[in-house]
Length: 269
Image 1 (cartoon, one colour):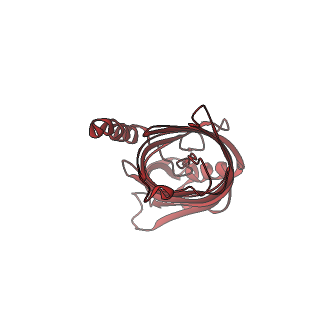
Image 2: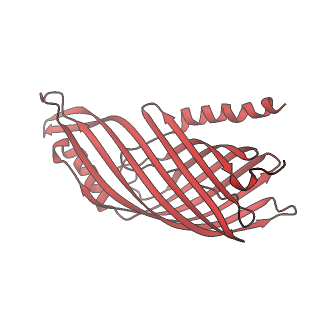
């Protein structure tokens, strides 16, 4: 009976990751960690992965409650991606250029949580935090140029966030949803002008539009088998500046994660 119940979650994970992952060479929202804390001294560590075409990512997250109704979290996100972009070697010459890149983000947050409902099954929380990341794009030279030089552009960014969330634990099932209000600022970048005006103009637009204020929404569906939790997660940009499409920001990120509730290790089910 457990296998029959467990299969829909695995199937949902495969379908969601195949159809829902969109990545960008400029910004991708990481998996939103939705707190499932209910009392002090609870702690969870989680590892997550995502794969879509030539793009792959891994994540590490942790959350801990040192005091009743108080929690701290740490998130790390690493994404590798590739694709093609249109470049211009002259005002009248355009071509497709391959690129590869990676982006990394490490952030921490602190907040409060509270239990509601007749059986304390609802968990509400509000967290806020700060993170810093770095993105690097490596562009292949145009095919008409006989060299193997790679053109590199990179920049650093900072992100502040506030995140209200709501979660529910029911038997082995746990679900959650959250909003993340993001203040995103790009700074300290190096742009290689040889990638062409189209690409450099887009990067400069990204920098000149900073700071940006985005709203992201997340959902998570998990299956608990103590002390572990297998979850499918989705985070999407639902509201931002009018120029978000011009900036080529990713709109959605889907991941599969496995968490370990450290406070449940060794306890009877």
